[in-house]
Length: 176
Ligand SMILES: [Fe+2]
Image (tube, rainbow, N blue to C red; front, top):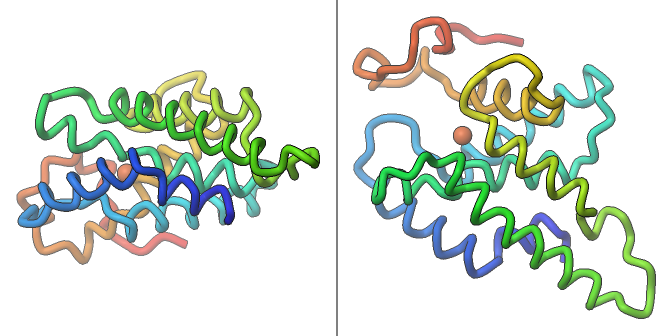
């Protein structure tokens, strides 16, 4: 099984994803389900190719899939979701990397089937920093921030007028 699918099937991921889906059922503003997460992953991967950033596809998809996983804890306990997401993600990334190594103990695991310690730290940093643009962002951090914002179709959203996103970050036209 691919490592990204292992993340999606991880019990902690399922638990927080399902709670988030339930709590956002009636939400009129942006939701944070699989459609959004994969939009972010694909936009980020397109930028990665266009700008020749050279980031591994699995790293981008993992960051995108995990970046909002703690959002339920923001709704429920007012924990900023980048912090809650990074905490949950740290455990999941550790588990899927270890599991993969154990599965392939006879062989050296293929690079695409695991995350090195450095890659795990890069992903966690990007999750922690994805909400606000600031100086000295890592390449993955900025990529996640940009792709997250651009994934939202504000110009086609029926709740746009009530949404408190700042005017300068709303997407009011199609960008190519
Ligand atoms: Fe997001």
